[in-house]
Image (cartoon, rainbow, N blue to C red; front, side, top):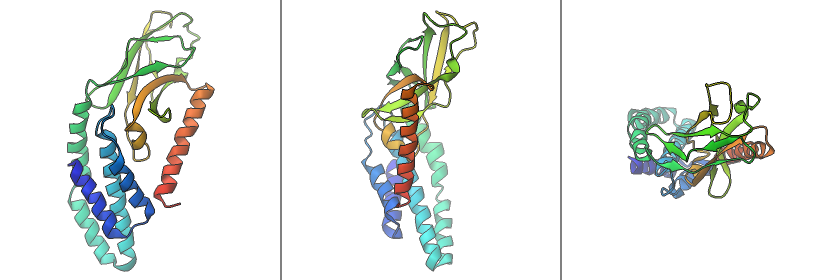
Length: 231
């Protein structure tokens, strides 16, 4: 399945006369490593997104000269059921291979937390870690500002979790347990980073380090978008 996705991407790009953006996406997807913590997941997503982008670019190009041929091409492409196959067959198969894998976990300096171990992945790409509050934790501890941030092996931030610390047993005090989850959602613009995933760091989003990471992630996303559009 993965080979078919990559093959389709190359075929569409070669035949479509698309701009440098689509061709670049295919080339970058083909070069992604699969020996990282997340295995084939980042490359599979990048391959699929590149194939979709190449097909869309070919459709747009055909519309300029032959609208009927463009409709036929798009109908044939949709009829292949690539999206359904990817979501219902390819991704679930890859997710199963990730179950039980660990992602090294760290804490930013100064947080009143202690982790029990590393983030561990389940079969649905949810990484979880548990821990306890340490000395200094109290009802004044701003747990809502704590967020996990994923970093690659080059030290670059990849993504920020949508959720943070999960704690329902008030009052907050030393010794109380908490959990933290990070759903690994890979996109075309951050697949290269996920392919080199090294660790997840729990940070305070009010800290300067977090704000810098957030800005880097947005800048990388914008740079990928501009490159894909040929800007």
